[in-house]
Image 1: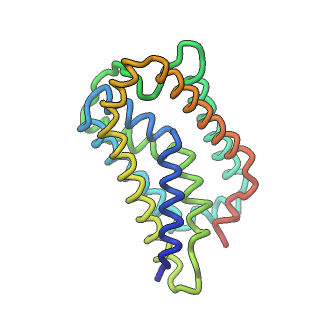
Image 2: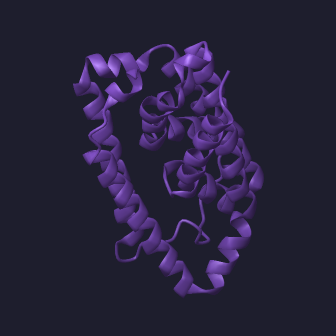
Image 3: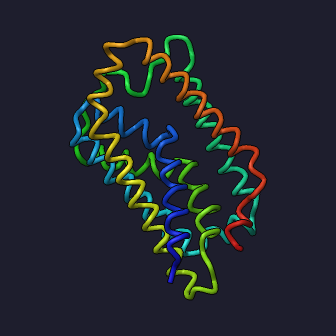
Amino acid sequence: MIGLGAIAGIALVELGMVLTPGPNMIYLVSRSIAQGRRAGLVSLAGVALGFLVYLFAVSAGIATVFALVPEIYLAVKLAGAGYLLWLAWKAVRPGGRSLLAPQELTPDGTRKLFLMGLATCLLNPKVAILYISLLPQFVDPARGHVGMQGVLLGLTLITVGVAGNAFFIVTAGSVAGFFGRHPLWQRVHRYVMGTALAGFAVRIATERTGAAVALR
């Protein structure tokens, strides 16, 4: 029903998104460093549920709503860009800290970890834009049921996203230890992360392909 090219393409897009620092990664890695891998993986379960919510929202036609009322799409886009700029400033401001720097956080219970992971995902503009604007571009009406293609491609996105984030959770402790022993590299990572977040925020705010893309 869907070609290998579409699967490979959407997987590469998601891999690139996973490697770009964003709210999901910041929350998952910081929680894993402060509270252990189990806490990070529980949080990731909440993030995965958020991915599924976006996937089925797109399948239910939320993209059509954004296309018919572009002001809503614009508001969501600008709010997300503003949030990313705020995260970028936190990273590069004087006294800021790297995502992977060792830090102390108040331990959270399993329920709160899961719900915070879900909330972080649902409020993540990267996820919203990926599912609403990019996913439909890999659907080929000539290959059969468009809705089923979207679901299968979305599940590919989720698989890659969950696997990539799980890798960062598992390795976060070791990397945090390295940064703790090498403050210079911690500073370099902080500025690289801030620059990436700011760049993505600008891209979101200036992107001209609005929700109408999702209707193609």
